[in-house]
Length: 165
Image (tube, rainbow, N blue to C red):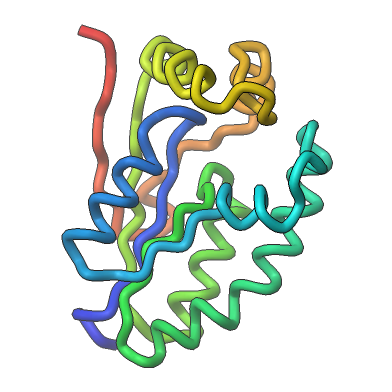
């Protein structure tokens, strides 16, 4: 296993700060950054308006990207994947990738309170008016599925706490 080549991925509620952190980690590690939201918005513009549609198109994208990400990792290129790892099943997709590629991994867990996420969501929503999943109601609906990562899952977890003071 190469310690230099790493798959970086994220867990945290919507608007916790995962994408900002992903960009920073990509820059710090000279790694390829793959952002789910960019791919989905370009491939399926205005087609994702609810959770079932998101799951449908996200699954298609993951099926396409798995081999590509493995190929990059197998060539010694670290990859930062800004796709959600917010459920055990989602995190198992990442496990499959780093195990197939035989590379190091880091799960970055952005542990933010609902209050912080909702505050950040309001700011983000001003810039993304008309896009799916930008209201507090949508935040609440999506957050009920969130499963924080646990040590028992066996990931190399780095935790970032972001809560109101």
